[in-house]
Amino acid sequence: MKKVEGDLTQIRRWLMPLSWLYGVGVDIRNALFDIGLLHTVSYDIPIINVGNITVGGTGKTPHVEYLIRLLSGRYRVAVLSRGYKRKTKGYLLSSVSSTMEEIGDEPWQIKQKFPDVYVAVDANRRRGIERLIKDEATRDVDVILLDDAYQHRYVKAGHNILLVDYHRIISDDCLLPAGRLRERASSIRRATTVVVTKCPQHITAMGFRVILSALHIKPYQQIFFSTFAYGTMRQLWGDATLKPDTLRKDNMHVLLLTGIGNPRQMEQDVRRFAQLITPLTFPDHHYFTKRDADTIQQALLALPKPHIIITTEKDAARLLHLKGLDEEVRQNTYVLPIEVSIMRDEKNKFDKTIIDYVQENTSNRSVASRKNA
Image (cartoon, rainbow, N blue to C red; front, side, top):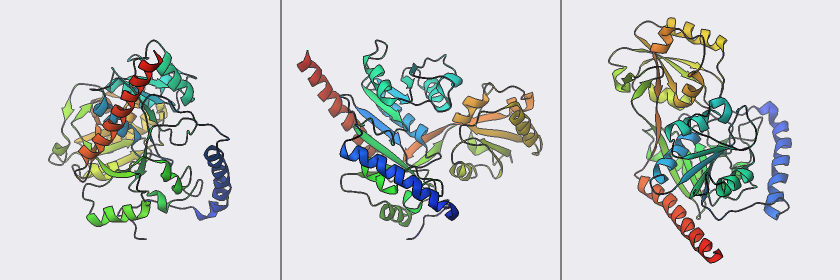
């Protein structure tokens, strides 16, 4: 099968025996759910799960934010995440004063951008949903967005959105640890909607056809393609703003600072408006240390002036309170906001799919509530 342009899939063949053993465990677990020995719970509230089956970033947070913008004007929205790498346990409903250490970097980012949205964290998704529904503070919630719960089959979401990275199409990948799949590519069958993310804006008609052929979408599923759109940059430790398209004109040297799952597409996109780029990458969800502060400062000072640091919103949450950064770094660090754009003129179709699901199930819930009353 022909591969897409920019394919980054790498298989470590020497680890295939371990992947086989891992696959046996995954298959047994999924079989137990399929035959009902492990129980899945459904709820009478619209639940949309945004997840993936790969290790590494597929753009979950920007897609969750897209759904928040779409739904929050009509419904009371809650986001439930496990709060990866947080330093707390159990269920926690965030506030605008919650710290990143308490709730995790992605929930913190969402709460800061959407203060009126309920943002809760709990590794036990059942308990988290039940608390959101029943607690006095959140019982008026209309729809719950589950962040990264595709493998959490103890909860049956009403609408499953599976995100697939354009640069790592799951049909070309294999299971951990030889590949990056958490479960087999055939688990795509559980998705209601598939979104191929991080697509280059210049993707050709042939590129779309290659992906459609590779993913074997079923008649009951819909598939969409999304790309990233970038807005005006803002100073992380200040109020200044900067438009990306001015960087090339000013011959700006850019230190692209990222600690995300897959920074490749962002690097390619930034090169559209800045030619002089030096990447500085850290692991996904990396907590920056004093040693990292020294590394960042040295990397910036090594670049000719004019120079600038560009980082992501997720990384900004972890950089904001980092000690040891000098004034040169603080004055020249800018955050590049990312938003999702649905491609092929299918935004209205995608939006209608989501709104119709929520509207129908919200109405059903209201009818059931009146009957119970």
